[in-house]
Length: 75
Image (cartoon, rainbow, N blue to C red; front, top):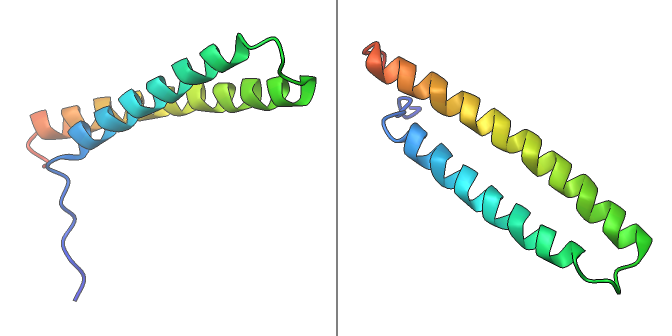
């Protein structure tokens, strides 16, 4: 039998995911300061950072949805 959907901590879990992604983004920005990076490595890091920024936006939208569901008594 499948477990029921337990969403009580989704907003907190998503917030932690945002924080972790921001930390990774900041570390990558520090890495980009290294002048010895190859062009390929620099481009790969920049592309990854763009994906991270997009993920952060998505996580924040999900957090808003979870908070709204909690306030509406759906959770």
